[in-house]
Image 1 (tube, rainbow, N blue to C red):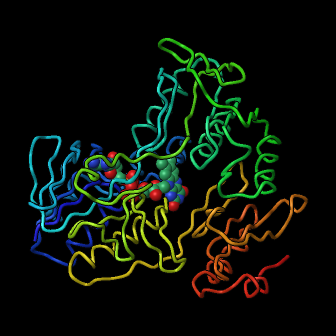
Image 2 (cartoon, rainbow, N blue to C red):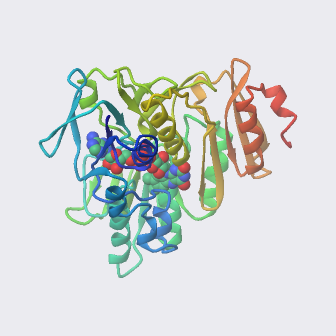
Image 3 (spheres, rainbow, N blue to C red):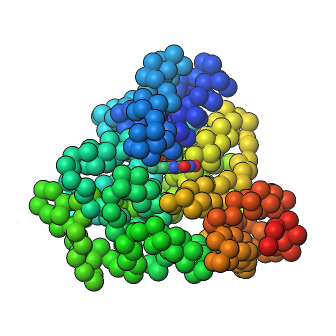
Length: 395
Ligand SMILES: Cc1cc2nc3c(=O)[nH]c(=O)nc-3n(C[C@H](O)[C@H](O)[C@H](O)COP(=O)(O)OP(=O)(O)OC[C@H]3O[C@@H](n4cnc5c(N)ncnc54)[C@H](O)[C@@H]3O)c2cc1C
């Protein structure tokens, strides 16, 4: 059996490892756009802050692939898929035949049109090295800026704070995660950020980068800002043209059923890129977290080796901005919820937002209220209603 895996991140690599455990004779290939062996994206902020040395971010050594008899193709991109003749065309000019193909390509960051040294993105180890270089090259304290209002914006705010770099924060909406949070939850985060000295400007759109070679600042639809380092966190944008051409159904992610099978036979998907049917909440979800990417890889490896297995996990993502902990559990899209319930308040310094659909709790966001994580997770697993969950929460 020939297994080809596109993407050498945690999902692709875990799948390869599982496939090897389950099929000692299989031919397994990982096609990896990045040049590094597997490393932890979760540890990148810790590396930048100097809390761990660079070598500690690596989870595999280069020798691991050969030891596992996994063919590893670093610096190679999958560009073409022929599902009828079952091969993938690669950027190195080769065509790789497969029996089963896994697409675990994660998500590329959405980038700005203009560029200058000083503009930073944050997805890869190379991005982390670049950010560190930018911070270190300044003799005097630079001015930092962040454009965006999601997870990566939080990472940049924390990093600038760590290096004591004064920070301007600009974003298009009214508050962080405005497709997820109720205004009062947004207000809690806003207050916290402003209280920590960040110069905050909501409802502004970045138009132009200022500076020829080195970044000098940027202009929004309202005003110009001085900035020497600008962190961009405006979401993710996977490129799907090669899959679309092969009639693989894609939407925001690669559409898959609860077995992580795509619309094309023998083509599977897992990790950040998968838009999979989640039977626990009854609709397709895209989940961008480490545990989800790893668990999906383990499940899909079973299905690829003939033990068809449904993926079921209530996954969660915990982040923090300047010490305020924010946890997202399961399905947290406001537009897809029938009812939203709030526990806690601005005055208490913590609010939990619960999402209910068809009389069933499907998701939750906890801001400064970690204690609600377990009861909400259990309510989702047991398909409980808000009324049942309420008894477990401390008001
Ligand atoms: C800075 C940062 C901090 C994070 N912190 C946390 C955290 O604290 N907790 C948490 O749960 N999650 C965190 N995450 C998210 C977590 O890292 C991701 O959910 C996880 O890495 C997804 O794994 P993946 O294998 O699906 O995708 P990825 O890790 O994105 O790997 C996909 C790989 O495929 C490659 N690729 C793409 N297209 C092609 C192609 N056509 N051909 C070949 N290769 C291709 C990409 O270059 C990439 O190397 C963080 C992410 C970042 C960036």
